[in-house]
Image (cartoon, rainbow, N blue to C red; front, side):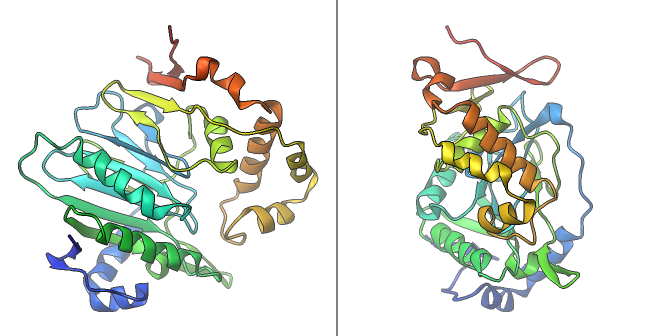
Length: 307
């Protein structure tokens, strides 16, 4: 079934500009969304999603109250929620495999909504900007097209993407909103940024840096974050980047060098250092098992001991 906007099936569109011209209410809602103040989220109730990750849960989750992600420049943050069950999924998509990723997102929510006879799937898209290479624009169209191909009806509610998420600062285009959170209990979506990006932040970054594909990182039935097992081979050549200046790292390791947040370069360096310290990924996953993390009573993520 098609993607719906205001209960009408979305016609084929060739550009995001055409989308916003055809549905001007999406422009209004995008302006409203991007003007909202950043919300501070308590790390003790947060499940953070990195690039090429997604997670789904329900309002009954006692470990997670907010799912969030940030540092999105050309990337898009995708939230899918079932209004009946309240089940919600958030993904950080970079265009690496959009057509195979979207069905996983839909399944992650519908599988948690089987007991709910009423309600509908609602889609919220945030991210991208008017970048020179049009990477954001291509990703916007691919995500919309991929949802358009799903057999389930999906209703587009928020669309703060590409030109509607663009601002010019000192002559340079950059996103207005880099990060969002979604309240698992209420479904409220809001702009946010996060200082705590764990658990296992460097391991998860290393997985993406070495070509890992979109991964579901959360078992909501057990309240467990699950990472890996991941595979990469030793590559000492990447040490080269640690001796380069910030501009060089930005130029070659970012899709949008002029729009990255200030901590991008340090994040890249710490990821590379982690890979150099752990050239054999197998050692991080004894017995080929994923790393599991559970929420402690104090609210921190702690590595779970596996028997």
